[in-house]
Length: 144
Image 1 (cartoon, one colour):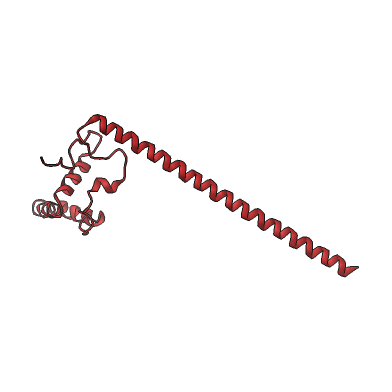
Image 2 (cartoon, rainbow, N blue to C red):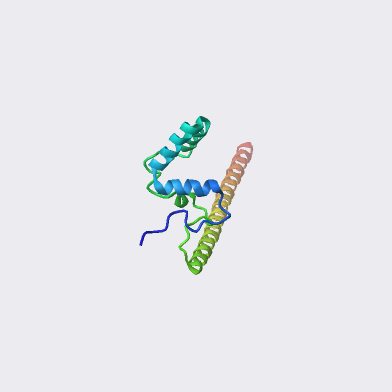
């Protein structure tokens, strides 16, 4: 049994462009080159646009075809369907919960950094106040 292609289970929410790029990514670099050449043959601005997109999206790098484009997008709503609705719902829910936990952890780290910064600033102000007080005490003794 062959694995389902990357475009299997695509939803109406995905644009034709996303489905097309996923389909071409699943077929590799040769498919992109073939589409570009056909674009140049039939309508040269289309071939030029495809070439520009391939360069801009880094489609021709050696690392591009090692991982599918969907995996690199890191969007929770864009994952390949397994064909099992219960599992897909579980997966979507788990990804949503993990994202919420990540956001909560990042918020916690931000509060931690702010608290550390405030403590360091308070310590600086306290030290500054002590130095200023010591300097005024030293000036008072010299004047007396």
